[in-house]
Image (cartoon, rainbow, N blue to C red):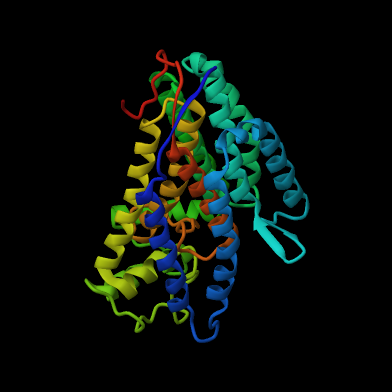
Length: 372
């Protein structure tokens, strides 16, 4: 199929928004450091930022369509790495010498590339139940289940949310899609409540909060949510930069899972609002990049990477402010986590590459659900 390529400039709004988030993230890790920890989280994140930026620059000039040839290889590699961590005792990380990375971050990237390749090849049949839902979900499910069993249920849930979103954009029939999502969501809720693990406590505590029912004082999720609320309240409108107290051992996981609360305490409502706007700009620019191309692989890749970043951001923000059950999702470009930072910068590099070229294919019979 012939592709006409018209070179354009990279999406500057996307690039500078990410630069802003990274520039904000490093100082926030430094501010969030308690005296006992010092600069360790800041220095480790800064060390991972260097290869991350180099990867972003390289991928912004790399022809992203070469990734399509690696779709199944990436999926197979992700499955084997996840299986290896499972056999080693439910670890989330793999270390190779001084280098360590979280396998789920690589798997997230692999799944998006696979779905972009799959939808590109079968877009004419995506309205069929077996082709549009059953087969891709069966391929992705082993990876999601292995991530779930680490245990990392939060990441597995966000991954499947990305999967169903891409299948919907790819052309799955609305009735089939809605029924499948409803059954999957109901099954998860029943399983989580019957399993009696930490996720049961999180769901019950969240429901109790909505209904105004007091939860157990010994509940870890209630403690986390309460401390996050205190941090946000203390921040007020303009924050208390450098004078926050929740970082001094009161708020658990203030470097990663609850860093938005630290942002709220240190920078106030103004700072958190600017941060939310930044993620909204990323989502908006992703939609614009996708709308400017009829290259199906590029469109799905763009939306997948965009959703990967924004879903993580708004789930993290949602549970910190009490709108969602407490999970363990990092805030993209802000939370501590080298492999997540590098993978997100890799995705941004590919998005910049896609934004440079307007590729037009003869696919008039296919229209993604992102507008025209």
